[in-house]
Amino acid sequence: MKETEDEIEILIGGKAGEGINRAGQVIAEIMSESGYNIFMIFDHPSLIKGGHNFSVIRASKGSPGGIKRRYDIAIALDKNTINLHKDNFSKDTVVIFNSDRVKKVEGTGIPASSIVEDAAGIPIMINSCLIGAFCKSAGFEWSHVEPILRGKFPVKSDLNLKVAKSGFEHAEKKISLNRAGAGRKNDKVVSGSEAVGLGLAYGGVEGYIAYPMSPASGILHFLSSKKDEFNIKVFQPEGEIAAILMAEGMACCGSKAAVGTSGGGFCLMNEGLSFSGIAEVPIVIVNAQRQSPSTGAPTYTAQSDLPYVISAGHGEFPRIVVSPGNAEQAFVWSAKAVGLAWKFQIPVIVLTDVTLGDSLYSFDPANVVDERYDYTASVAAAGYGDYLRYKFTGDGISPAGFFTGDFGPVKINGKTHDESGISTDNPLILEKLAEKRMLKDHAIKEAMEKEDCIIRSGNEKSKTVVVSWGSNGPLCSEVCGKTGLRSVQPVVLHPFPEKQFEDLVSGYERMIVVEDNSTGQLAEIIRNHGYSVDAMILNYTGRQMTIETLEERLKEVL
Image (cartoon, rainbow, N blue to C red):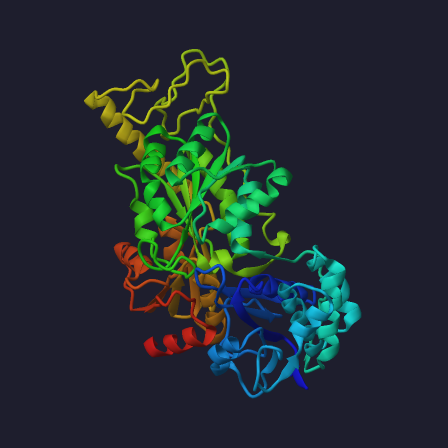
């Protein structure tokens, strides 16, 4: 029997449509409730049926920032899972498989198809059977996992439990786990997309509008399922142009709104983005990055939209761009995005990717409740008289009035306008409007310096700094912690937090930038701020690097 006290990595694989993602989530939740911290990836082609889907769950007593190459347990619903992943097996890997479909394989064969058929179940319950076998192999007692599994099978619970118990009884204990901390009540397992949705709701969003587009669709599905609980209006219009204009219409009526999309949809939203810039309509836009231009690889990851979202839309206008790296960061900065958009009456872009959106993370609400979420917006007093929607002020922020309030006539204009919102081409007013936007941009930069815009970890005394962003942040943090390097992860990418960055890289001799793109987009921004970048580790496979891959590539450049 293998002793695995503090960490275990589990693979489950099969065809699209066989419930691989849900099965992985159930295993992740079992491990979480047994005292482990979770990171789980879900790898799937853009198919509804067939192909090869798999989840990898890393459960650790530490803080997992990525997955490793070697699996402790592999659960195979088909032979393809064995063939494609056998290079990730070691001599100690426990292989659990459906022996009705997988032949000539060493390991724990479970006649899962027969068990399901004998129980008068449906084919997707095969994964319930193999989850039961996993629980026995991992050393769980049935009395421990039965109440957990009952909560994970809301539909046909008794039948699923019967099938799972049969799988449990067909297996044998192979691994002994450290269950210290089992039964923690606070930790939840959530996807990055769910964390974004939770953050938007916590930040006060009253409407979420999106046309389905991977990998942002998870936010739409989650908020749609929670709309009554969160008291949020959720709409799916005919396309992305309609989505952003509907959201801006809500904002003009005083309701906080957000939209979600991926790169191609964001392209279509550019005119609406520019409208937000000149009309000073607050909006939150979630852009979930996918691999390659155009349709590209919709279900695979990249960090390739950074300079685009910073400069998207014609004309010059202020915006904020943030890129969280895990579920807790996604919650915090999605909530902050709502407050910041309304405080400054600007677009705030939350830049995510497939790795963040589709992966599962441990999430402890206690880690996010003390953050600042209260941003006071400048709102005009009712009965203002001759209301000036675009009143010139010292910081460029005009008191906001809405169509639904008692402000008198409210004129919101996408053309150049005077203080009251009346269109004009007067050169002096055009000049003042540009200066108004510059004043607001300066106010934003000053305010963001008071936020914790950068996450630091690792060895703060190291002369080698590893800079990353987005979902690579936790990966680099873990590797830097092991290798004694300094990790710096800017979450706010625009306006770039110059003073904080200067403080956190102070005394560096070598700077290495890690990104999931082929051009070094953050590295270019860093160079433009006067820093030398000594090496770039660029990954553009559509999959996040493993812990070992990043360690090896760091050794190559050190």
